[in-house]
Image (tube, rainbow, N blue to C red; front, side):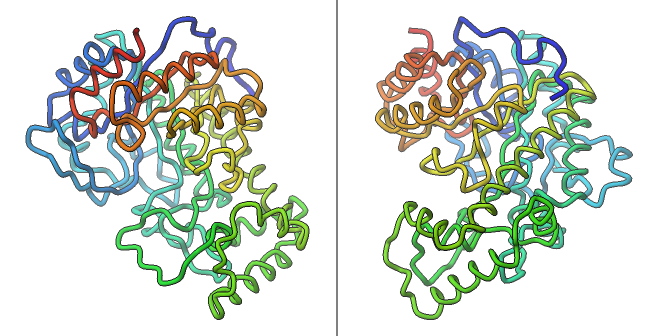
Length: 409
């Protein structure tokens, strides 16, 4: 990886704390006021703000006028340099908020003044607005149907757009870090709006339904030595049997994959190739940002539960840590779950020197100050000093005090 010297920075001996937040929430409350609360009340020295984001409905407890927020049918919350996208099939879809106020630009100015880091949080492939507008660029089921909540990671047009997007952000907003979320194959079940399914999935069937067979992915797989037609036949035959008879509705768990790999070894090669495809994409995106601006790039390792099965989305912490400047790991568990996942992760990557731990500051993981204190203490015992908390816009204000106490005591 062509990484400028000193890119990942020295290991932090003191605690580093960042909070995720939404730009519409900061604009509603007043950007300087909100960032002051994040810095002083939560004790944080960084804020993570989304530049490209998916759709959603958000309950914002301390918002003065926007308690229930529905995102616009837009993907981008910054002002892009439009001429950069002249040659890309995907064009930025800019929110009204960005056009009228450009809160991310204002946040960049305020963070510089306050000595805070700005993390540009980019949700890369999970995007209903962009995938619906470009169904030919979306992931496809084995039946050839587009999954219009996620773009295909193998498609050249998708990759070119993401590279252009990240350079635009790096050059024109100059964040301290770019954090990549959703550089992965999204699962079939992802809480899509009014998701109605009348059969009972076991985990194995859910994964098979979400496998991407877009022609670009199939071509990519074939170049990597995978017999895609054989895998597609196995997947389709298995799903057809399930949909007709329901005989697979037996509650089998993840362990069934071992049997499936023995039955059809090409399926394992297919899943392994997904890891290689995603790792190569993160490498390509990281090097593009490094060449353009020399800004560190961090990759979020999946949101799958349990996280040590992130390979089902095409993620390997072992591989990602080689091609990115750091990895963020969402420890969205109670204390025993955090310990389990930390042990799994340490077996994979050995050192936690370039690991950022993400903690969920909302229920069910956080219902009290003690919940946060235990989570932080457990992870610090593993040698982790970099933390990010989700999410300023969604928590009650008193939780800001919990974050400060948990990280500074």
